[in-house]
Image 1 (cartoon, rainbow, N blue to C red):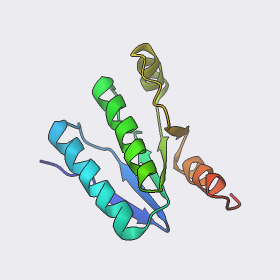
Image 2: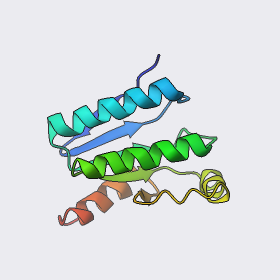
Image 3: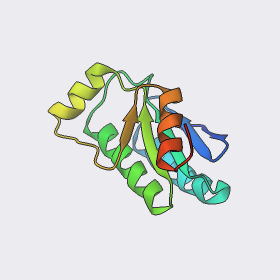
Length: 121
């Protein structure tokens, strides 16, 4: 099973999804991320889905679950790199991704987290 790497940048954790996620890899990612948020004291999580070409309800639920879990551990989540086709599909599936902020790219995602945390972007 491939694991999704979690990178640390200051008090932000960055997850770049480059593989097809199955149930096992999502569960491993959620566990790894929860551990990383607690261990590092991260205040923000960025999930980069630039490489995700196809989205289904599974991916949508995974993003919502990760965001909810991060919020419970006092970290905000921003999803970056969403393609227009992915956004359209999520809307058509009725997945609003409540509680998940979005940004066009990594730079804007970091700026959004800085703004939410009260720092100057």
